[in-house]
Length: 631
Image 1 (tube, rainbow, N blue to C red):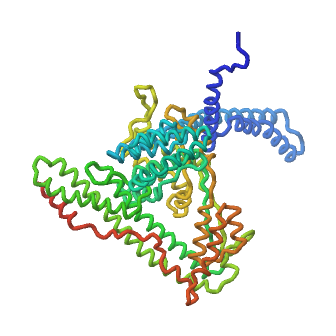
Image 2 (cartoon, rainbow, N blue to C red):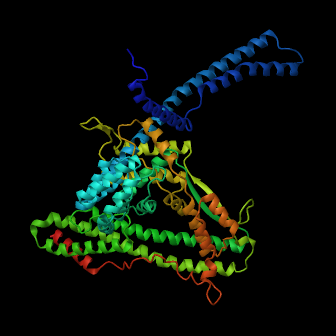
Image 3 (tube, one colour):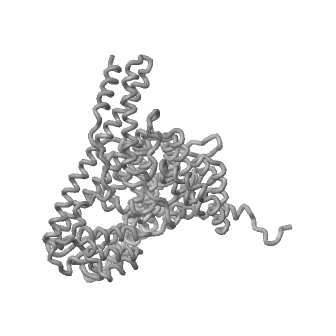
């Protein structure tokens, strides 16, 4: 006897998966149709209609107008025979086209499925490579940080991550208890634990901040009873696109890190899943000289920002490379560390290598280690020289920026309506422009075909099964992962122009979608549906880009922020009213006795570290090692 109110478990358990499969399959079919498929029924009806009634009516009307009488029986036989032959030929040609086109469409659909299924699995494999490249405590900290970024991490997982980071079971137990209370909404108990153990955990948090600021922030959030929010997303690693493009331009994959590979995989899957990334820019149309000075200053600002980003990117690449090598003093290049800390660690590691090589050169039984360590120092020297050259470029671009600024101030001294931020309809003057970075269905299909071809050629998308039966991709190597990131950049460039500075800034200013819920055992259709749902969950936040644009307009272009402009930026983009009000008073607070704004003497608000030229001791040690290896 069937019990009342009891639901059939099997059907309900399968219902969510069936819905995901259906939604994902619809998404894949829609992308495929954008480039390959034309409905065969529509084409067939067009042929039959054109070759049938239309041809007969046209022949009858033409004969009647030309000869003044209706066609004879022989003429009707001719026209009908002609219609049948052309119609049959058209139908046969259409069927042949549909047969070959259907196979082509199926191949495209298979390629889209292969990419959608492979990217999340390759993302997990890349994260494993990141952890595998580290050693000791750095390995534990990176793995724990990855755990804490998961939105659905269990209290046991939170406790494990806290134990890995703090190495204190009691503190880890407390943080795990706070996560249990958070899940049931008992914030009063969370406050009790914070008040009781806050002073005890504060020194541990401070010590963790010195070595891993990013992981410390994640753990502090858990102690505060907060968990990652799917709508907020995940903060991107700064300047990752610049490092990938630099690796392409200079043909040097050492300029790229595994974290950059992870970010590129996330970006590709976001865009394929339908992510729309907003982009704010401003432009000037009006007086020719003023417009020319505006464009020159904007280009100088873009080059200066790129130079600053390049210097930090090269320094991070050097630190990450040394961290990935065994037997160096650099354990990791944790996110959030200042450039001075990264430089100090890298120089100390290279000093240690330079001291070790001469000792190894005198020991005949240490030839393998000598060769390995000399290669590490040689690659580090090459990266260090790129760091030095990049920071020298910052100084040159800074001087050019000041020159363009003086020209803009000289030309724009005559204030008029065209040198203020214009709102409402119109085209002339200084105006904000909104753009969206996205892939349409045709672009998605072309990106997937490009990546599917590379995955097949590289042999990294062939599925295999573990002993547990879980399907995964073939093992991903360090070189293959970096090559994949390069191919992703090449596939996306024609569609979203990754090389443009404003596009890179827009992507960096937004958080990435959190794909932590994508599991390897899901089908391609389920991953497509989940990916589409996750990118839709991301909250669109233009407050930070709007505030940055307002700051640039005020500081660099001497634009007055009027009350109407402040209200517009606050209402439309969510910019903080207090920040905009403070910016509107910028000129009055920085006006000097000479009547000119003296705050624009230098824009090196974050002064670059003193890198300097490579040390002679490093070269001497490398020469000694090479001579010993040649004998």
